[in-house]
Amino acid sequence: MPNPTFAVLGLFSDAQKIVDAADKIRPRKLGRLEAYTPYPVHGLDRALGLAPSSLGKLVLGMGLLGAFLALVFEGWVSAVDYPLVTGGKALFSWQAFVPVMFEVTVLFATFTAGLAMLFAFNKLPFFGHPVLHSRAIEDITRDKLALSIESTGDDFDTEAAKQALLVEGAESVEIVPVPTWDRPLSLVGLLRTGAAIAAACVVSGLGIYAAIKVVPIVPPMLKMHDQPKLNAFRSSSFFADSRGMRPAVAGTVARGHLPPAFTAPEEAGALLSNPLPLTQHTAERGRKVYNDHCAICHGPVGDGVAQLSHAYGAKPKNLLSNEMRGRPDGYIYGVLVRGKNAMPSYAPDLDENDRWAAVHYVRILQRSQNAKDEDLR
Ligand code: HEC
Image (cartoon, rainbow, N blue to C red; front, side, top):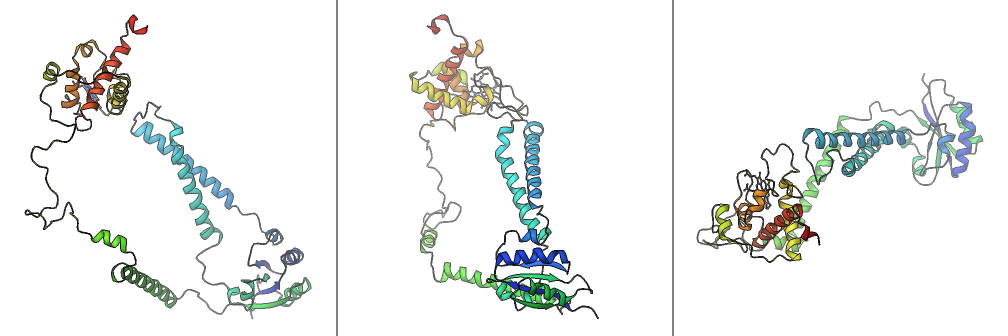
């Protein structure tokens, strides 16, 4: 007949006593030593003969792997798959990759820690443990510490284990029998759990519905939502044509966006001159507009060396050439407003003053590259 004992539990009230008892009992090899304590006890893992956990090394390894994978991925994307110069930096600028590398390191490390703890180290899912059915469990989860000698086979000597615990100062001992259930996870149990989860979802859903619609506990949001207003894409009974979204009145012009009175840039060159006086303020405004809207194609100094990827087929003009220096201000303004071939119109993005400020700045770039002696004095 097999030994019906799962384990012998000895209860202690003092953390140091349980460590000492484990130290003494372990060499006697009476069975597998285990401890159940309501809080972590220093030195107990050593006394039980447990090897240090390898979780730390695992987390470190996976964190480093995350950082490495992020570096390789970002490097491949920015330098190989779609090379794009950003802010004049080298294609493979590892410094710019650091934030994402950091995030991926943390992601890999935390997921490894959580999942390895649950499934590898704590061997979950785990439904029920014989000690949970002991009488002592109530005390163990409150203030008692239990040292347990667990059976390793038929030759387990229950009486010897009991005596050893009592000799080492256990206040009481309890024999925990091998559980009588054969499968802790039954179909009925699963169905019950599923039904309980479903019931919880229904109850909380109804609760939230009631809190919002029936007994409005969150009135400000509710009122904002229900106030009379025009929904751009809904019909409205307010206007005769029942449209919510109103078309602009015919002939409407946005402030600073008068339609140009010319068609070709040459025409603008002959008609218009720069109305903005060149001041420190205008020059700085022009530099900002140029750097934000033009430098990506025409280059930071205007020499036409674009920062764009080769995927942008067209060749932006060198704005410093003699041809460009000979063009009147109005011409440059005209190109900016109307666009030219592959260059789109920038009129929708820039108001009148910004456009002319950019023209001033193109002139400044031209002059800076063709400075005369007098300019240096
Ligand atoms: C998307 C890229 C791009 C941007 C941004 C861009 N340009 Fe251009 N630009 C071009 C290209 C391409 C050409 C050459 C067009 C052609 O084929 O004649 C050009 C030509 C020009 C020319 C010369 C036109 C001629 O007579 O040949 C001027 C002047 C000019 N751009 C001014 C500007 C200004 C000012 C800005 C900023 C508001 C700007 N560009 C922004 C691409 C761009």
